[in-house]
Image (cartoon, rainbow, N blue to C red):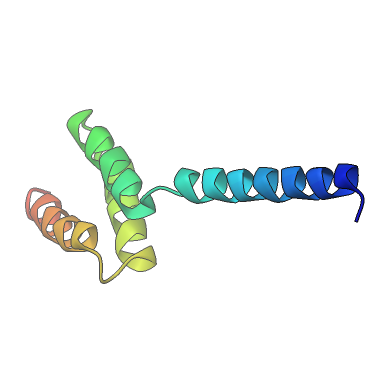
Length: 81
């Protein structure tokens, strides 16, 4: 291989690796994000939307610690109605 092609190939591999790392770091914890949004709606007394978000969280991430909290919060909200 010519030195220029080797350098170009190495550069592309490095850029590809950087892009993959960026994509993986942006994935985040969706269950946590959903819980935070539900809690915000809850604090703003938008109970209907908060309940929907808690239910979504339980449906999408049933075994997560956030789902356990969402179940408890839904029980509490349902008792208050």
